[in-house]
Image (cartoon, rainbow, N blue to C red):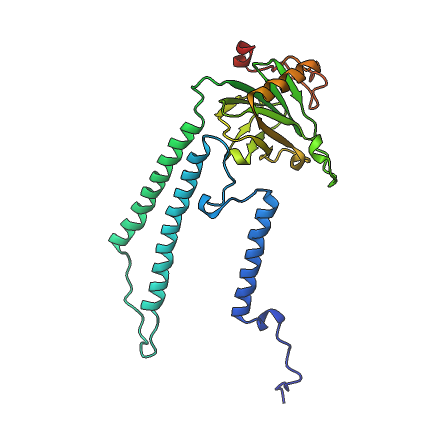
Length: 310
């Protein structure tokens, strides 16, 4: 009397009707979509598989970064294949048999195995640390005398470029992103001579920024009150995109710039053009975001090493 008929039975929730296989396929599909979306939203131009999908490097340091990147991926893939292989082997070798109703032998510990999965990760981390520290030291080495020194000043939400040897500057303004042709003209452009060593002296006017030219395969933070610097030798002429790689406020995505690597003659002509427009002297970090005036109470000027060069 109390049994429910087939029509009266409570409906099965929809999520319980999904088969495990179809659920797995759905998760794999969404994971693929997420990876593609992250790559697209990052705005990075992927390189070839032989380069580990890195953008094509255009400096002398690029090959060092590429070698470290590919070496790291090879090591990680070897570890991944080993772990996946062991997992599959355990699934097959220790699967439950139909005529076996007893639990396997229970062990409280296995000393050789515990030593292996303790010592091996420590050894791997030590190797990664050694090569990373070695390459990082080389990439941040500024002991050589540069032919060109550019003080890059980050500000919300644009860039100023001080060409130290030429004693001229470029004032940048926030990019106007309208989706219409001509947006590139609102982005500040830094000029560099090809084949010559350039030192970037990085300072910030307000908050933490990060100076990043993807095709340089190198970036460095810009911290208020601190001077960071690194050197590059551009090996190819062309125009390359740059951006801020540190979330620095509401218009972080519009903090863009271009780097134009040109011949020495064209570089000198650009500095002469800046001088003819009256953009002489070097801008300090004591200015407003747009460079129009002093910030009340601020006395932080150019780094001392820049003063010695001017």
